[in-house]
Image (cartoon, rainbow, N blue to C red; front, side, top):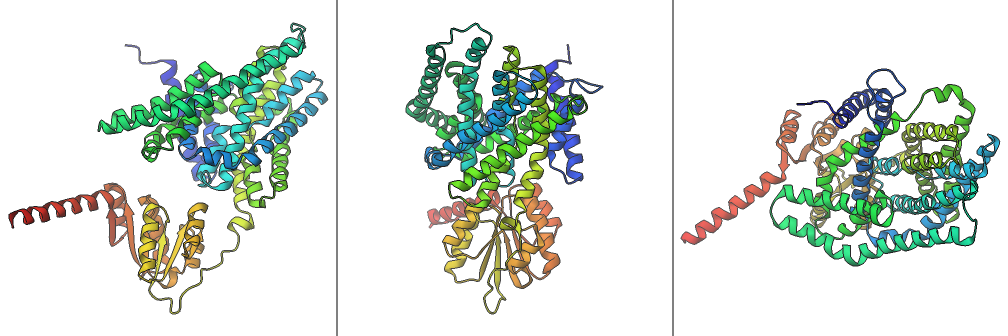
Amino acid sequence: MVHHSPLIATIVAGLVVAFLMGALAHRLKVSPIAGYLLAGVLVGPFTPGFVADVGLANQLAEIGVILLMFGVGLHFSLRDLLSVKKIAVPGAIVQILVATLLGMGLAHALGWSMVAGLVFGLALSVASTVVLLRALEIRSLVQTERGRVAVGWLIVEDLVMVLALVMLPVLAGIANGDGQGGASTILLPLAITFLKVAGFIGLMLLVGRRIIPATLHWAAHTGSRELFRLAVLSIALGVAFGAAYIFDVSFALGAFFAGMILGESQLSRRATEETLPLRDAFAVLFFVSVGMLFDPSVVIDRPLPLLATVAIIVLGKSLAAFVIVLSFGHSNTKALTIAASLAQIGEFSFILAALGTQLGVLPLDARDLILAGAIVSIFLNPFIFSAVAARPGDTGKIEPLPQPQPAKGLIILVGYGRVGCLIAGELKKAGRSLAVIEERPDPVRQAKAEGIECLSGNALDPLILRAAGIDDASHLLLAIPEGFEAGAICEHARKLNPDTHVIARAHSDAEVEHLQRLGVPDIVMGEREIAARMLSLTARSSRQGKD
C-alpha cells in the first residue's frame, strides 16, 4: 500500500509546519499569520528541504476561501448588503481606479506596455478575502457597521475582478493584433458577464431561498448530526462550485450568497458552528500557499520596484479608501478600519497575474512583484490593523463607569451575548447595581440603548476591570462562552479584589475542571443544568401521577 501522495504530503506538511511557526509567532507576540506565511516559505520551492505541491496547496486554499465567505454570508442579510451600497459601490470603484492608475504609473516607469500596466494595477487594487475577513473576525468587527461596509466593499471588488477576468483575453487579443477591435468585441463579453451574474443572483433569490433552507431543515429533522454537517458543507461547496462552473462567478461570491440565503434560517448559528473547524484549518492552508509562492531573491534582485509595489498596496490604495470613506461623512475610526483592511492583496491578484502571464501581456517580472507584494502586505497587515486599533478613539484612556453610592454590592457582568443580556435584564429589574464589560461594538451599543452601564473592552485587561469597578464589586459573573478565557479573567480579577464572588459559565467538562482548579466557587454548565431541570420535571410529574 502506498502511504505517500502529494495531496497527503501537502496537507500534513502545511499544517504541521504552520503549527510550529504559528506557535513561535505566538511566543514572540506576533500575529500567527506571519508564522503561517513563514511556514509556506519553508515548504515552498524556493527554499531547501521538503517541497510541497504548490498547485494542490492553492486548490486546498480555495476551499478555505469558500468556507470563510460562506460563514460571513451566514451573518449577513440582503438588507445589510443593501444598507452599505451607497458607500461600498462608489467607494470600491474609485479605490480600484486610483490603485490601477498608480500601478500603471509604476509599470510605465519600468518600461512595460499599457495593457501590462493595466493588469498590474488591477492586481494591486483588490484585497484578499481571507486576510480581510480574518482581520475583522479577530477583532469581532464582521457584524459591526464598519465591518459590513468592508465586506460590501469586498463584494464589489470581487464583481469588478470577475469582469476584468472576462475582459482580459479580449484586451490581450487586441493588444497582440488578433482582435478586430470593434465595439462588439468588448461589449458582447461584458453583456454576457452581466447576464450571468444577474442570472446567478436571481436564481439564488428566487429558487435558492426556498430550496437551501428547506434542505437544511430536512437534514436537521433527521436527527443525524453527521448528515446535517454534510448538508452544510454540500450547500457551501456545491453552490460555490456551481456558481463558478455555470455562471463564471467567483467561488467566494457564490459561497457568500449561499451563506446569506441560509442565514435567514433559524439553523444558521448551528451551521456556523459545524463549519468553523474546517474553515480555520483551510484558512491556515491559504496563508501557507501564499508563502509558497514567495521567492526571497526578489528582495535582492529588484528592491526598489518591490518597495514601490508595496507602497501602492499599503499606502496608495489605503489612503484612497480613507479619503473616500471620510468624504461620505463617516468617522475617522470607520475610515481607518476600512483602509487597514484593504492594505493587502491576495487571491484575485494571483489569478490576474497568472492569466496575464499566460496571455503574454504581463512580464514575468510583474508577476514576481505581484506575488512578493502580496506576501509582504499580508505579513504587514496584522501590524497595521493593531496600530489602527490602538488609536485614541478605540483604546485610549479608559474612563471609569459611574459607580452608585455606596458602591458595595456592585455586580460586574462580562459578556453581553445571548446569556449575558438575559442576566442583565433580570438584574436591572431587581434594581441591582450592574456594570457590563463587552468587547464587541454592537452589543455595547445595545446595552447602552437599554440603559445599562457598559464598558467597551476586553476583561483580560486589568485597566478595564478597574474601570468597571472590580475593587468594590461583590460579584463577577463571567457569561462569555469561552471557559478557559473566563479562567484567565478570574485570575486577573482575584489579584485586584480577592473578596469578589466569581460565577462562571462553562461548555465542557474540561472547562469545568479548569475553572475548579482555579478556585472558581460556582460554575454553570448548560448541559448539566438542562439535565437537572429535566430530571426535576420528570420526578415532579411522576409524583403528581401517583397522587
